Image (cartoon, rainbow, N blue to C red; front, side, top):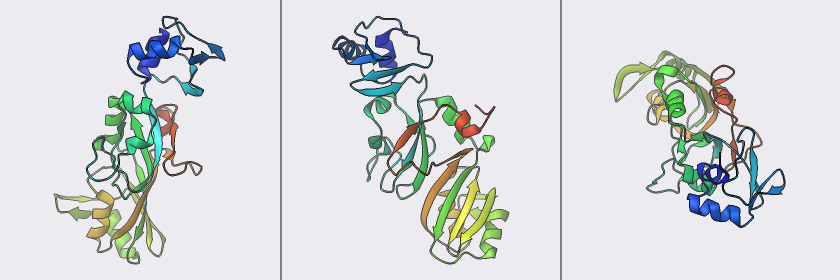
Length: 235
C-alpha cells in the first residue's frame, strides 16, 4: 500500500492532507523519516509514527472504551456530549460506531468499530454474545427477585418473558446479570419488573472480554481483533 493511502485509510484526512504530512517529514517508520507519499509500505505489523505518536495499522478499527457517566453513545447526541469526543480524531474520521449503546448514566465497557459485519455479529440476538452488568439497586435484593430475573419477566413492549442468562446477588443492594439480548434499557426495565430499581449500572464484560482494571474512565485501547471478544476461534 502506498504511504499516502496508509494514512488516508487510518483516518488522517484527505489524500492531499496526508501527502502534506508526509512531505513535511512528520511520518517515521522504524525510526526513519518517510517523506515520499508514493512509497510502497508493507502493512503487516506496521506501526508508523506521526507527529511523535505511534499508530498501529488496522485494516478495521476495533477499540474498547471505559465509558464514564454523562456521555451519550450517539454520534449526534441530544443532551450530553458524545463518547466520540473521548476518541482521537483519526478514529472519529474513520467513522467508528458504538457496538450497542449504553445509557448516558451507565458506565463500563463499550466497544467501537468501523466493521459493520462485526457490529452485526456482536449485537444480533441470534448470536447470543453475553454481556455482564453490575447493578446497584435502590432496595435490598431478594432471592425472589433473582429467581424472577432468571425465570423471566415480562416487559410492556414484549409479551414474551425476558430472562437473564445468569443472575446473582453480589451484595445487599447489588446484582450481577448476564444478558444475551440488547433491548432498550433492558437491565433497568427487568429489575423494575421485579419491584426494585437500578440506582447505577456498569457493564463489566462483553463476550469473553472483561473491562481491564487498569483502563480508567474515559480511556480507550486498541483490540487485536474479534477474537479478543469472541474467544479463540470466534473471530
